[in-house]
Image (tube, rainbow over the protein chains, first blue to last red):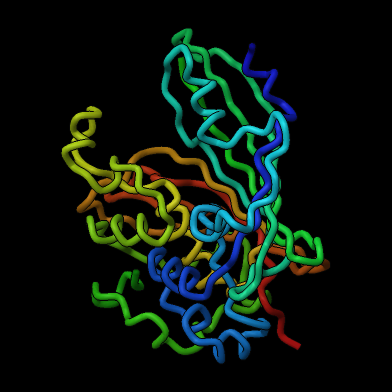
Length: 162
Length: 157
C-alpha cells in the first residue's frame, strides 16, 4: 500500500467533554494569565457564554475529555493518528509533526460536549535534495457543537522522512 | 510569560484584569506586538504534559531523551505553539483569532530564552481582518515555531 492510499481514510469520530478544570489548566500551561480562562464572570464580561478554551486547546481535547462510555462506534476502516504513524513507519523512518493549523469559527466553551470527526485530507510524496523520500500527511479534524455547528477546523501535517 | 521589561515571574493565573487588547484602528502594517519572553524550564514542560495529556517521555524524561540521541528533554512543539497563541490573543483579544498556523522548525531546550515576534502584515478596512506573521525565537534568533495568523480585533464604535 502506498502512502497516498491513505487519502480519504476516516479518523475515528470522538465525543469530547470540555471540562472547565481542563480548560483552566491548559491556559496556565500555555502561560496565559487572563482572568477569562479562570473566572466565569470575566468570560461573560468578555462576551462569552462561558469560559472559552484557548486557541490550541482542541489539539489536546480528545486526550482530555473523550471518556470511553461516550464514544460512538468506530467506523470500518477508520484509523487513529497512532495507527497512521505506525503504518507510515512500517519500513522505518522518522515521523515529525511538521505543521499545525487552526481555523476558528465559534468559541469552544467549558461545560459543553463537542463532536470531532476527521480524515486524511491529503498525502504528498516528494524527494529532498539528499534523495530522502519526504511524505507529508494532512490530517483534518472538525470540532462541532451539539447542534452540529462547526467550531474549529484543524489540520495536523505529519512528515515521514525515510 | 511577561513583557520583556517586566520581572521574570508570571502573575498568578486569573489575577489579571482586562488585558487591554488593541483596537483594529490602532494596528498598522509593519507594527509589532509587545515582545513576551520566557526562559523554558522543565516545570513548564511537565505542566504542559499534564495539561495536554501528552506524556511522550522525550519531553519529561532526560534518560529516555538521551537514549533517543537528544542532549536532554525538549519542548513539545504544541507547547511553543500554545505560548505563541497566548501572545497573539494578548494582542488581538481572546476569541478574536480567525486562523492560526505554525511550522515546527527547531527544538526548544530547557534554559532557552524564547521570545515572541509578531508583526502585522496586512489590514483590511472592509472586513476588519488583520494578518500577522508570528514566531517564537530562541536567543540565537532561530525560530522554534513560525507561522501566521488572521484576526478580527475589536473596533472602535
